[in-house]
Length: 121
Image (cartoon, rainbow, N blue to C red; front, top):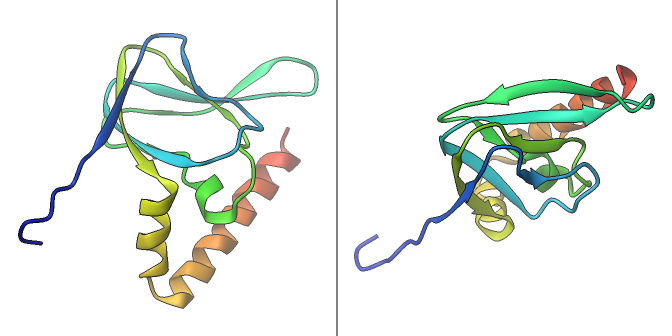
């Protein structure tokens, strides 16, 4: 829009630095601009399972914004990483503008992913 200024919030994380931890309140999602992020979850026996790795263009942390549930895993930078931060309000405004069917489908997907992950831990 003409005359509108948009600010993009970026954060830099260093190797081994947690972006968020399992159980944290999810108040933002992230887009990997540069670097690498590992999504991890602790098993009941104390060991850690890597659920995935994200590199440039990867998006994570969105599930907690869709269903307002705590983080289901940890996100850790495995090298110096620059992330674009998407806040809850910004995310919700985009989600609210989506077709109601798509919003409902997204919530079902998130619920299913959480259930599958919990069953395999």
